[in-house]
Length: 342
Ligand SMILES: Cc1ncc(COP(=O)(O)O)c(C=O)c1O
Image (cartoon, rainbow, N blue to C red; front, top):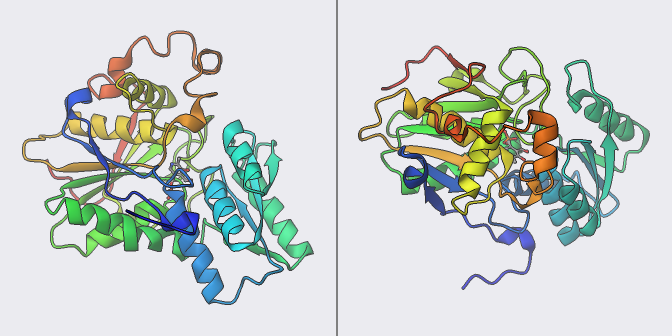
């Protein structure tokens, strides 16, 4: 019986969904949404705050400030409330309403940026705002998830060993890329492992994280409007980019089987199914990481008006696309230097 006295002390780290019966492909989905912050960002937030405390950066006067599309903001809100720090989250107009309300319920302040930057995203403007705040008042402490090594280290120390302990014969790992903290921590861990693991990064079409043209992205979590400073592509074997329409179809396909996941899980699952449809999967062990759950997306991905306004009325008519058996033509795959296994 786990008994805790701080909210970040609990995290369900060993729950997997076997997706074979839903999509007909061998894929285990590691669920990271079962903690009090509701997402994988609990790990990065805990690691970064504890490192700042060890380094003496945080005092009772400190005000934590961070740019976040939502989930890190919720995790930091929870930790700040538990430890008695103040926290200001700088987010943007794509942040779900329920995520913003959650942060406020936990006692945080939320600032919303609504002007797009030159890359068609909000990130540049969010970071500029945080920098300006820190320049004017030295009580502000910016952990900077985009550059903080604690972000990837959390996954090197926790997420990857959790997977390794359950899947000693892992062949391929699919990881969504935002800041690339999860990707880099897992990729670094498995590079040193007892057998080679093919690391596939899954990104959103319209993100410029791995190059490519910037474009509209409405689903928070994955994708970046700048190159992620933590990214070292020499650890990544392959990059798959997924259209938001395919993300949405994958989310709804899962929801129809009772599994309500967040948007980035739909992206990772769609990308993984596409990859699995193009490879020999006999004796293949494949794992994908689901960063959060679906309740925060009830007014977006799971709401008919939002879907129809942005993606058209027929967005859910051809759900087989989400299985990887028939991809939309815009879906792109790019292979890096190292050879994929088949
Ligand atoms: C829902 C969701 N998915 C994926 C990610 C990406 O994770 P990372 O920043 O480790 O690349 C995030 C990050 O905020 C997220 O909130």
